[in-house]
Amino acid sequence: MAPEGRRAPLRSPRADGLTVVLAIVLAAAGLLPGASGRRSLVSAAGGGCDLFRGQWVADESYPLYDASACPFVPDVFDCRRNGRPDDAYLKFRWSPAGCQLPRFDGADFLRRWRGKTIMFVGDSLSMNQWVSLACMLHAAAPAPARVTYAAGEPVSSVHFEDHNLLVVLYHTTFLVDVVQEDIGRVLKLDSMRNASAWLGAHLLVFNTWHWWTYRGASQVWDFVQDGNSTYRDMDRLTAFSKGLSTWARWVDANIDTSHTKVFFQGISPSHYMSKQQDKEVPAQGGSCLKQTQPLQDATDSPAAGGESVLPEQAVVRGVIGAMTAPVSLLDITALSQLRIDAHPSVYAGPGRDGCDCTHWCIAGLPDAWNHIMYAMLLQQG
Image 1 (spheres, one colour):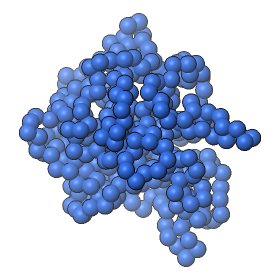
Image 2: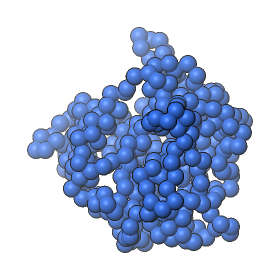
Image 3: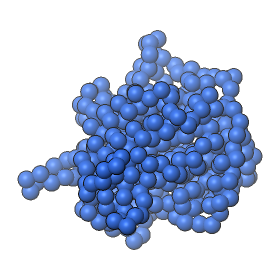
Image 4: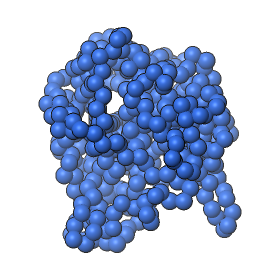
């Protein structure tokens, strides 16, 4: 179980075909899409544009797709099917300050990434973004779409056959290893035994954070190993920094960035109530239960021009900033903090107790993450 009031990130369902999917992933090869047809962001002021500062604006043309027509959405993200009565949360578009995002063009995305492999590597927040992109592309694929879907553990994939585009999820909670040893389950901060499975992709989108914070029954390790030293526990932010630094060194040493683009999905915020001195106080905006509109008064949020940065955000920025490989930070934290309305809440499906204020409804907020990533890829060429 997750800590009281919180739900642990989901694990991918198991299915046959893991070996086949891994073989496809590892066999992928080729060059990144060329810069022909490159688009630019439209700047209202003629200056630079920070894609992560701005506001949510109502847009009746949204959502970008109908989740009920997307065959990849797991029950836990399918809020409307699970009985959520309101739909206003679907009809907001992210608008960066000072410029306009090019509208997401799924057909263009499919053309640019024809014959390529896109891989999301991380926990269930990576699953959230992976499902979102698969649905966005499925809606744009020519009908009848020839698509192969394989759900497994740790690998799930969607293959758009007409474009030979493989969109993969590799499920891992920490990026570094948890190994069963005689003393118990050991979180090894300097070990990445499975990382070879990520080689060969043309776009890698990494994520980790939430599982580093869990304690009690939700904690999936018994000891932490740092080099030759083993501990019962460690300051979680310190452990996160050490583990993420191991990932960074692996990327620097193993990823050919002339062949592969690398993104890191920033910290996805939760919206729960926390207890201090026997009183419930808002945590990152308060509980998501019965919320139907984005927050409008988060004046200290970086999305609104404030300077507040979470400690885990600072770790991510510091680690990426010290890397030699070019890694694009999908800095989604601030814009997502405003979307207290976009969680599954109590609409995470039958048999799931509690209120999920960690994950996100599909369709919904992760579509904006992918929209921004699309704009960044267009800018990079």
